[in-house]
Image (cartoon, rainbow, N blue to C red; front, side):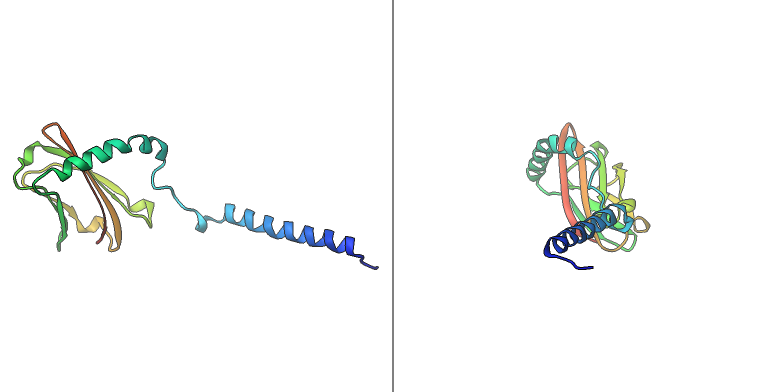
Length: 148
């Protein structure tokens, strides 16, 4: 059987299309290549972004912002000393970019100016911390990328 140039071009096209289809199907079915979104409802979150900007501006007007430090018991979050701890409420959200199952949220309930997140809940590595809190009707937001 003799191959002419027209048959060679058709075979080359079929080979190229098969090669591309193999990679498309492989990328869509392989579970180790799955990438999670930061949040499932990111469109809704984007519409609320101006509120976050306003809360961050409010936080900058405080005499002292939140501080965190790693201790042997866990992560210690310190709220400003000049605020009454019983009037502080809100949520702390810790997001682990490398593993969605490690993300968690906890409510803020203070008896003094410190909030302790236990060490057993946190693995070493990178975390994004978001503290959305309220003090006497004013909303504040603290966001930071941290290495724990």
